[in-house]
Picture 1: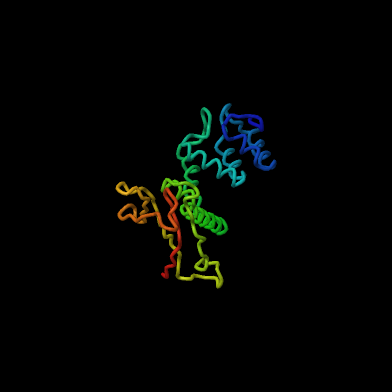
Picture 2: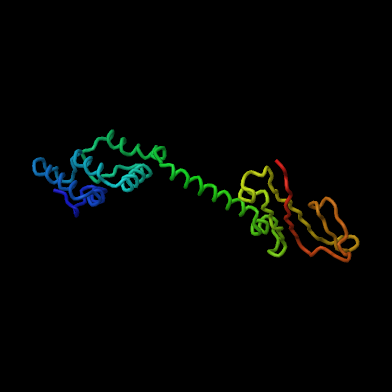
Length: 213
């Protein structure tokens, strides 16, 4: 007769411990007239305990069974394959029964994740890696926030700011030996020995252009 210490089934002990004492007493009373075979749990006993188990535990077990695609039992068991599929398949559409608060939190976290991803794409580290320059070779202007939805007054502003990237590369003219600089990826070169020469190496400057949409 199974109790809290038995492990005839992989997940039976966790289910058994999770239900109230009156439910366990109901199952024990059933065992007095119809004891289960060693190493198994009767279908009706399983159903009684399963229905009384906390929703969080049942969802955890469903997801594990579905993800691992294995039977939750060790050895012989009285549940048919059809009954097991019925239990496991409930996890596939569990999101359809989410409460409004769960949907709101999910959408909120997705929104935060997208904002973080956008900020990372325009980060200094990304430009350093992308253009193969030094950390101090990248300058990024502060992005204005007057187009943000949360900027006063609250609401859609029908505008946005897009990055404008200027890459400056320096080199030396082979004929004259004078330092030169390009602002268009090497298509054209200008001498770089005037009163304000561009710093040697690759310099990346990121500004912001406001676009009305």
